[in-house]
Amino acid sequence: MLGQPAVLVIGGGISGIQASFDLASRGIKVYLVEKSPSIGGRMAQLDKTFPTMDCSMCILAPKMIDCSHHPNVELLTYSEVKEVKGSPGNFTVKVVKKPRYVDISKCTGCSMCVDNCPVEVPNEFDGGLGMRKAIYMPFPQAVPRTMTIDKENCIECGLCEKVCEAGAVDLDQKPEEIELKVGGIIVATGFDIFDPSQIPPYGYGRHKDVITALELERLLCASGPTGGHLVRPSDGKVPKTIAFIQCVGSRDRRHGNPYCSSICCKYAVKDAVLIKEHDPSARVCIFYIDLRAFGRGFQEFVNRAKTEYGIRFIRSNPGEITYDPETKGLSIWYEDTVTRKIENLNFDLVVLSAALIPRKDVGDLAKVLGIEVDQYGFLKPSSSISEPVDTTVPGIFACGYCLGPKTGDIPDSVSQGSAAASRAAEVIVSGE
Ligand SMILES: Cc1cc2nc3c(=O)[nH]c(=O)nc-3n(C[C@H](O)[C@H](O)[C@H](O)COP(=O)(O)OP(=O)(O)OC[C@H]3O[C@@H](n4cnc5c(N)ncnc54)[C@H](O)[C@@H]3O)c2cc1C
Ligand code: SF4
Ligand code: SF4
Image (cartoon, rainbow, N blue to C red):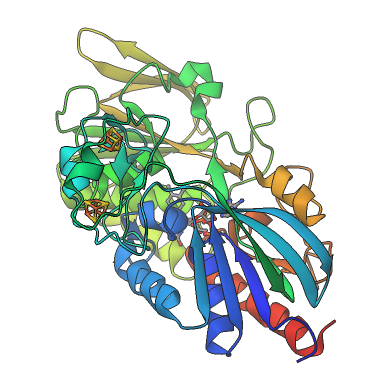
């Protein structure tokens, strides 16, 4: 080996986990830097995964554990990359570990602190549909299995410190800066969700029963805020009529982004089927521009959704969602693009398939790394045809949704993670 015999992976979603595990299995030291308190990324928020309908966490959790327990992986969660210098084979990286106010080496995850903390705030992991305490673990399978104090909401009452028998709470913890020497870097920072309140006629943020698909995933998930019972956020009643609106912020130059997010048709069909499995008497409609159901087994899945589950697909342009305060119902007004008529249908719950967009901080990270982003803000591959996981800087690679929509799904993110790991391993071995 000629270069530094280690790789930095930035982002601990499924693609970063796969890249880290592959490199570690080849005997290469990996520093996995994750911004949030736990690795897992978006996949940890999903209920089931299409088209097999496997439980998302059942696939992800063993991968999170294998990766974090691997002797060649050093996990740096709640941390961020601040500076990168050097060249392929020899990068020097500054990472800041943010204070958790809990000592990871002492915390046993017993939850005594959580039980005694008096502060409750909306839980971002559940899309604000449930609550968490100021001291919290983002989700039960979090890795590392430790608490974090959200200092913005903490009132510093000291109760958690008092009840913690392990002496793990440290309200005076300070940020810590560490320096790493690595030969290659892999970026795997994923995506954000488009904020549908930017399309006011849909009423997201005004009507409680207009939610995003990611929020729906949390409502359907057994570990979610309602224990997996699909209820309306406004009154806790079981919705009997549910609509999905596709391409919210995707393929829309006026309100959002011109590109197709490439994943929403697939997850909407999955979620529609899940709703019917929860409640076969529910009426479920999908309002779509045109259905993009590519991928192995997917067209067959759509066909089954129509014939076996009775899900109605309406080719349309939805314009507005109105709310009737008396019935508490939502009306979708749409142009049926087959009959060319303006119609409306009433629903108890409307799910918006919101676009997947670049993370808002990806530009800052790109600057630190000196790599380029494309016209939308996703990371730019050096060549999308022949070098799809190389960035515009040699020695720095990328994988997963931070490169923008391709098929955009988990299998795609996993294969890209492995591809980026192979490319980074070449740098380590050749030093170039
Ligand atoms: C509603 C919905 C349903 C879906 N359903 C399915 C499905 O059924 N099947 C399927 O195959 N796919 C599904 N997907 C797609 C799937 O979520 C993605 O393919 C997958 O999450 C992409 O993984 P990733 O690792 O690229 O990114 P992410 O999962 O977004 O992970 C990125 C990680 O990087 C971290 N990070 C970000 N910035 C930084 C930084 N600067 N420094 C350090 N860390 C950082 C983040 O905190 C996060 O942990 C769905 C997506 C949505 C929105
Ligand atoms: S901080 Fe202390 S009380 Fe809280 S989970 Fe950790 S060990 Fe238990
Ligand atoms: S000090 Fe903060 S985190 Fe701890 S119990 Fe009080 S409010 Fe909760």
